[in-house]
Length: 300
Figure: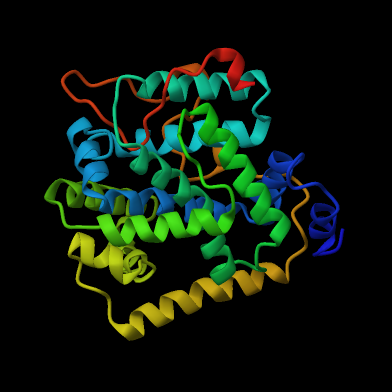
């Protein structure tokens, strides 16, 4: 297989009828590392909205059980990608997502914003750091895939195009990013988690590298001291060079899903999809995405 052969296959597919298959090819074959990193940062940036970050701190899921929350979120979302909305595994993942959040409330605007991060941040990351840019077919397929997921999650007034998703995200962040002490605790816990995946002596370096990849609006919201201009330039250059190196490698022949990521630490002996996730915390209402009770049949 030649380096761009799979892209040719993607361009020959229908991005509306075959959206999840195209998205699966992009996630599991073309850009597995890039999607993992960009979706980590997509979820991370939602903490800068105080209503989201404060609630996550109150539930303690991202401060006291950070690794488990990371694992479960990655595995549940990726189960749908790997197996599809109509599969038994996909339906189970959606039931678990809906069930674990049914007791929580949040505004429709926050729900749409979180969904927007899943669509917009991977494209921005890949276009900046990937071995090639995302094609229009892949972008449209990503939109269709997450619009479908959003409907199963009960999210209202979902944007219809990538451009609408991007505008929704940018406008919402401009209006709502702000300092919150509890959200900063969630952010610190997440940065500590990312550093914990590597040898301990590298932790300060990895924290600086991660901060170097954040935009100024995020750094301001969390009141982090920005890394120097030189440091930020070198870190971003290094990530771009990684993409150029990947371009020279043979194309991936076997899929790579989130369950295979070395960052997934909590289930060395395997897991049951129906047992993933969290359960409501007594006295706490709200979560980063509200899930309504979608009938099981709708999950297919």
